[in-house]
Amino acid sequence: TNSLCYFRVATIMTVLESPEAGGATVWPYARISVFPEKGSAVYWRNTFTDNTCDVFTRHKACPVSNIGLLFCLYLASLT
Image 1 (cartoon, rainbow, N blue to C red):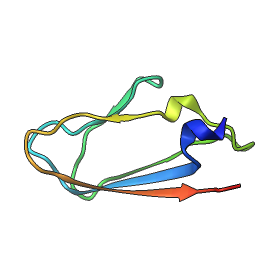
Image 2: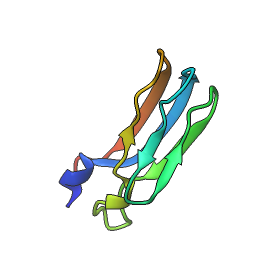
Image 3: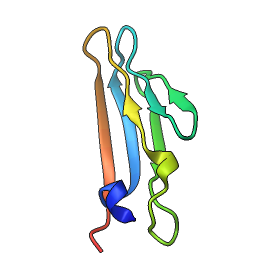
Image 4: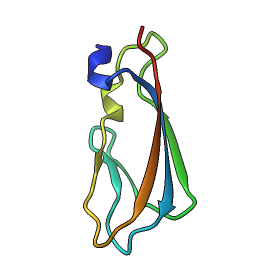
C-alpha cells in the first residue's frame, strides 16, 4: 500500500556538505549503498506507476563521524 511509502512518489537527495566518514544511504532490499559526496544527488521513485509502494526503495542512513548536511526533497501525492 501507499502508506508504506508515506505518500512519497519520488525522492531527490542531494549532499550539501560531506561528512569526514560514514553517512551512506543504504537500500537493504535492493542491496545498494551510496556514499555522500558534496554536490552529488540521487533520485528514485518510491512507487510503481499504479502508485503502489516499491519496498525496494526503503532506505536507511548510516551514522557519520562528524556533521554533514543532506537535503531531501520528497514529491508527495495525497490521493
